[in-house]
Image (cartoon, rainbow, N blue to C red; front, side, top):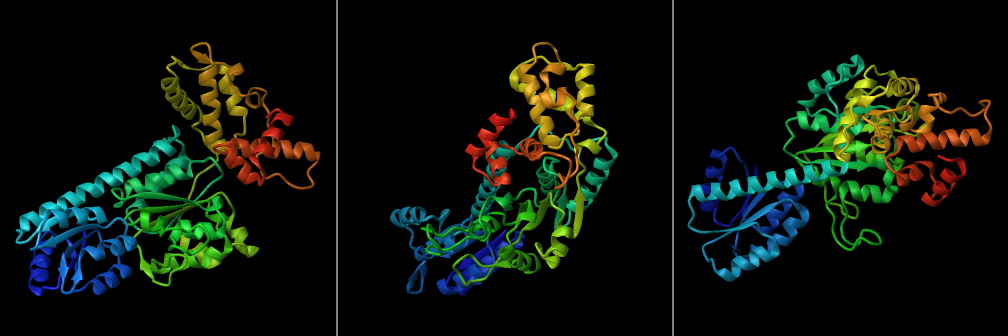
Length: 445
């Protein structure tokens, strides 16, 4: 780990440094609170060993500003003047532990082992929480489909590096699943995996969500916030739908990619970060560059390695995916479902799947709930699939021989199929959820 020693006695600092470096930790020293804060502003630390008495200063007064800079920092107060009151006060202010002088190297190592255990548990809890929110049954990374096999092979090869990766693919093709797999296959697997949804916020709020802000930076900023970059320290930062990144943020992200440095909103202090960046998009970024909507230099920095996920209509493993999903939802619903009828399989193969894996998952989940027998039949599938609707899978084009109503119905159907919720679909369409609800009723969607 990276350890900061804050003590005004050179002999203590030297002794701690030797003991910690012998245990393969990286050490920086500070002889005052001012020096400690300057170091913490320039680089992240995992642990700070802070002397209770720093000349005329109190080490307890360093706890709050250090945690403001590094919220994940474990602060251990060390002192030859220990008391129950000072220990309680240290913990109340946010210290991780309390170590009384004289201490042995073994005691120091024991404290750092507890810090490591705490960090590991915190990462596991964060990862489990993220999995609970985002776990999807189509996370199948052993596909026999040749296109998918080539993508997975390249992904495994690049996972070990810290190179930026750009994942391209239509909505619902599993870009987030592949990003998480890259993280799990990398040397950062024990660190956090943090997602930033680029289309979800305005430029100002997205910058705060990404880089953090200081209190008073804008209306509603009632306290400091460290941001997603800091939360992803020593892990992976996943920028979902990077094609929707607002133009004012693009040069700041470019600088972060080049230097791994950034500033919180409302602050001039430059901070460093140790994160691996993965981005995903369903847009043609080259076309966006051509019309000036996306920076070319940013695309070059993001696109060190490109991975492309094919749409479901181009894959050869539809039956396997459908069976995998049916087994998953059978377990969830407590039903004994053995497969699909021949008619149902034929209908699924005819369907163009504009919503890709997400649409397939929704269709199979619906069938698992409605099915009465051991096999899913044609009647258990959504009407658009059962009826064999074969609308164009390409982009809807202005000037096509369609009425405005037909154009709107088809667009609504595709967006609904590829969205994880009605709220997400409404955001994509740029309308209120209530308006979308009325249109669904109007068109029977």
